Image 1 (spheres, rainbow, N blue to C red):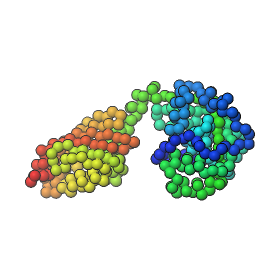
Image 2: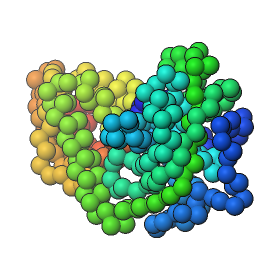
Image 3: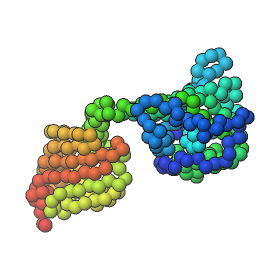
Image 4: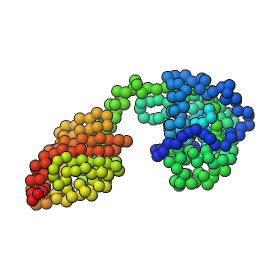
Length: 320
């Protein structure tokens, strides 16, 4: 498919077991030549194969147009049988270019640090997509299944698709994960810190839509102590219904948090803050907090909160 996909929801094994590749020219004898014979860089064959099978980054495919300038297209790919397999429409600009010149360059790598991946060059062969198994496998690999509107649309016109078989002749790996370790850690730390501050600021201005958008669906919130609100709440909806709702129902306008200190490392953020609030009866409720946030995938995945529990009981549960 000629498009960069959205976030992948599932990864399947990429060993291609589809129909036999139909080509205009004989396929090279794989017993005499492997695409990994020319592999250079830090990776060995097994590492390169593991990357190709696990990665759901699109392949960036470069080919040469009639005017001599290169063209680049992003496609879904799958590795198998010493080749990279893609699909494109028979009338696409890419198909026209490959009919004119089968020589291609390619790169498979992510966009976020640390940077690592494979690049190379090879020959691309076009053939009719006589069996939809490759297209179905690509949809499963990149979209998590075939039942999305896009998936159903692509399958409905499968007879118009072409199979692209790319046989690399040169292959190069690179891996900057070790040398970028401190950079990645710093970037992750700052990103995590910003998510937590965005969450607190949104809460202060009453923007609950933003607050809950920053929480993972499987959020775990633990309120430490022996108050009526103490306990472990599992799931974003449970936190809203069983903790935030009952707590805020006793307050005039929620809790305004003033952040006094933030300590962050990678995906963990610790916030020391003071809160200002007032009960429905006009009684001040100004507590002190230590909140430990853990993030995953850019969302808040868990929160452990410590506060002055004696104040909670005295102001919010005086009859307890």
